[in-house]
Every structure is written in C-alpha cells, then in structure tokens.
Image (cartoon, rainbow, N blue to C red):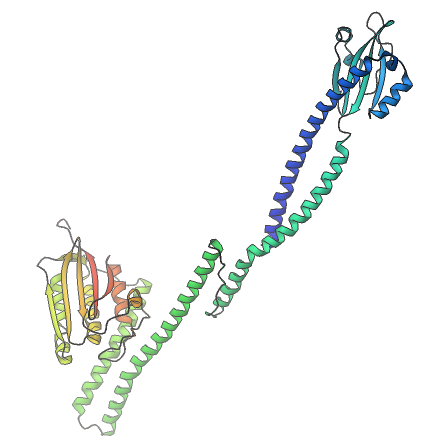
Length: 443
C-alpha cells in the first residue's frame, strides 16, 4: 500500500507540475512575443528616423548584434510599390504592406518564433522600410532548462516526501494487520496502538481493540460456562453413581430414599441437557412457534404457582399478582410459560426471603416482571445477564452455581415472539421484565 500511495502522490505532483509548467510556459511565451513586438516597433521607429544609420549596412549589423536581433535589413520599394530588396528571413513580402508603410504606419507581426517590425523610411529616392526580426523565445530556452531542472528536483523531493508520508499513513494499518493476525491465531491479548489524533485510523484501532476485548471476555465466559456445565453434569452423576453403587452393594440404609435421590438427580440432568438442546435449536432456528391469543395474566399465575412448593421449602414468600383480567397477546403459550418458569427458577436461586411475580399493562405493551430480594446485579453486568455464557458473580442462596442457560433461553424465546427482555436493579435485589405487544381487539 505504501508503494501505491507513493506512486499516487508522485503522479499527482508530476501532473500538477506539467499542467502548471506548460501553462506557465505558454503564458510566458505569449507575453514574451507581445513584449518583443512592442520593443521591435520602438527600435524600428528609432532607427527609421536616422536615415544615415538605415542606409549603412555595416552599422545596421552592429546594431543588430548590440540589440540581439535575429536580422535587420533595409527593404526599398520601387515607384509602383514593388520591393527592390529581399526582406530578412522570416518576413514575407506580403507582410510589408506598401500602402500602410507609405501612410507612415509601422508594421509588426510574427511567424512561428520570429517576430518582426517594419518602420517606413522616407528617402529622396523613394520609400523604404527598416525591418527588424528577433526570436520571441530566445530567453525561454534558458528558462526552459531551469524549469526542467526544477521539475526534476521537485520530483525527487516529492518521491521522498510521498514515501515518508505513505509509510507514516500506512504504519497504523500495518500495526492493525499484525494485531489482527495475532488475534486470528488465538492471541487475544494483542492490541493495536491507538494514534493520538481522532481520525478514521484511530477509530479503526479502537474498534479492533474493542473486538479483541470482547473476544477475550467471550473466551473467559466460555471457559466459565464449560466449567459450570461440567460441574452441573458431574454433581448429579456423582450422586447417581454413589447411590446406585450403595444399592448394588446393599450398603444403602434406605433404598426408597436412595431411589428418590437418583430420580431427582436424573431429572436435573434431563433439565440441563434439555436446556442445551433448546439453545442448539434456537441457534439453528429449528423450532416452531404456535402463536395464538393468550391470557398473559392467567398464564403467569399458573406458571408461577407451580414453584410455590419449592419456594415454601426454601422459606421464600412467593407473591403472584396481575393488574386486571384480559391481558392478552399473540404468543406461543408453552414457550411463554417456559419463559416465566425460567425467570422464577432463576429468582429462587438468589432470593433471600421474597419473590414477586406480576403482569400488567404498560403503554401498548404487556410487561411480565419477576423480582427477587437477593444481592442484586452490578450495573455493568445488567446488559449481559441474558448472554448464554454469562454466569452471575453474585452468590446464589441455593442450588449451587447456575450454567447461565435459563436466561439465555428466555431472551431467545422472547425475541422470537416479537418481545424484549431486560434486567433492572432494585433495592434490594433484581427485577427481570419481559415486554410483549398487547393484542388489539381486531386480533
């Protein structure tokens, strides 16, 4: 890229020099021709007034050398206006208009690079004209050589400046490329130096650094998630294996209790595997929704009441309320019940003494809220609680550590049904809110 940028800058400089130089040379040439014509007219008029000079060829040649003329000559005319002498080179007979010269007019013109002036000389023997010629570009030849030299120097300087500027401009891009290669190779600690200025390159560097930070965070969450899932899988398997071996060896004092533990742990495994499969289906969009009019208040009450025995066993007061009848929306009833169940189950893990579940109308939306009085969530973590790899740093009051799957499933299902979900910090505790569009009377 440095090579292309250097070439582009040099090309622009060369083009600008050519346009400016050729334009300048053209204007100078036109101006020089006009100035030469004026000077030749003045000089021809001066010489024409000196008849003694005009008729002495040797003196005319000396004047031509002194004035740096191309040529000088005296052209005599016969009685009928015919020229007796040949005009200097570069001047044609047609240029010497006898009538105008006889009227006392000084003639001037040019042919190519030769400029001439012809002034009438009144001689006793008849009319004559003193003709002077000079090259208009005589002084431009030296200027042209200097222009070529200056152009070469400017071109060399432009190459050096363009290469330096190109290297400076592309250095952040090279740094970004090196950092992204390291990130692609798995080094998520790689960062791009951010330039001091606030331009597009600085914005690019900040974006790459933010991407690397987010990837690093996601990797940490993934490791935490795998450790959590491994723990959740190993714990029930250990219990099942221990009680199964105890029953097999006859060492279990109460076979009925041991079988109940095995069944409970098996259901726990089934739920975890079901959550993993649900997330896989949500990712692949291999699930079907059956939206139909649903009474949200009734559904929330039914889903939350199913957790009352577990809440009572944990010493948690479960309060379920709804504003009024007829809170209806178009949703999949089973999936919406799963959403409420996951939220209540999550609240049970962290609640200290109370869980409040409710449904109410807010503007044109129906909001389902589940609030617990647990330790709460840090403000920085609120936007990430529904990430599938997120595990809360707040200590759960019971049921060990969660895998972070329940809330991730909640967000996927709610978004699939056209709603939104958010987490709010309250004093004390946390409130999870699901918003769904309220059904109109027409629907």
